[in-house]
Amino acid sequence: MASGEVPLVVCVSTDVAVRERVVRRLDDFGTVVICSDLSELRAMLFPMVGNGTDSEPGPVSLGDLSVDPGGHLVTWRGEPLALTRLERELLARLASAPLGVWTYERLFGSVWGGAYLGDTAILHSAVKRLRRKLRAVEGGPQVQTVRGVGYRLAPAH
Image 1: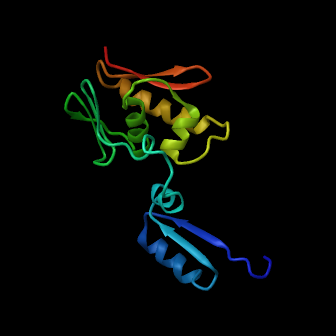
Image 2: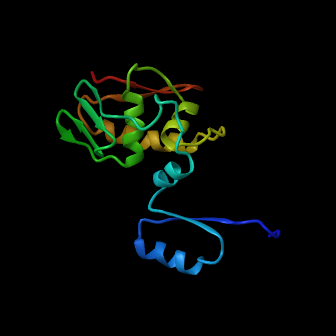
Image 3: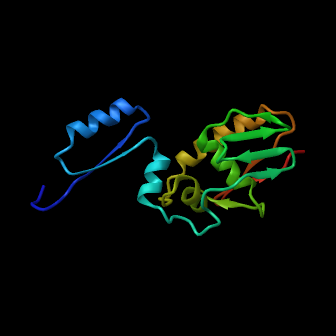
C-alpha cells in the first residue's frame, strides 16, 4: 500500500461480538465501517440514492395484498406471508402505483441500491423465490416476466 493511502474495511455482521472483535483487531489499521446488514451499509455509503420514487417504499395495497416494508409485513387477505426483507422490498416495488413493468436496471437501483451491471442472476433468483411463495397462496398475485426488459406484478385473479 502506498504511503498516505487509508484503507476502508467494512464489516457486515448481525453478531455484535463479531463486530466488536473486528474493531479491536483493526483499531490502528485505518477507517473501519461497522454495520449490521447490507441495507445499513447502503444507507451509510449512499444516503441520497433514489429520486424519491425509488427510495424506501411506504406501505402498498393492491386488492387483497398489503405490503409494508418498513413494518416488515406482507399480508394476503389478512394473513401474513413469510417473506424475506429482499422479497418484501421487491414485491413492494412491483405492487406500487402505477402498476407497470419494472426494468432490471430500476429494480437493481431501488431494491439492491446498486448499479445494474448486466448480470441478472441475483434478480432472477430473488424473483423465483418470491414466485414460489406467492404460488402457495390461493388466487394470489403473480410476478410476470417481460422478456429482456424486467418484471411486472399481475393482480390476483
